[in-house]
Image (tube, rainbow, N blue to C red; front, top):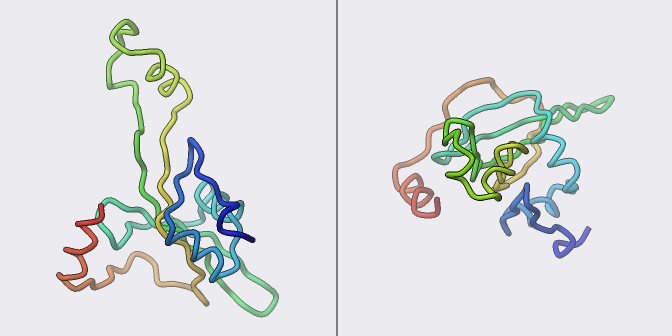
Length: 134
């Protein structure tokens, strides 16, 4: 797989970090999209305003989990207004399609079975740096 072959679409935005993680762990963009669309588990991400989704990838002898950290952007809902004349055509189409863009921040494989729902300690200086990027 080539990093240049991973393209941003209307539905997904790939960060450079996530593209390199695909190479590092031997993941395909299709597998990552499948994890996002049909996750086995959903957790809060360690970075602010992020979500981590997981799908099991078990073999005969090994247990693995494929994790993807995402951030949703541009989600429209029907509460934004009901009068069609107030919205332009693009916004109305987004409401009909339920359009939202998913930013794929990172992807990784966890060996074994990860603990469910435990908060991960993140130092204050690292949190401040993460917030500056988001």
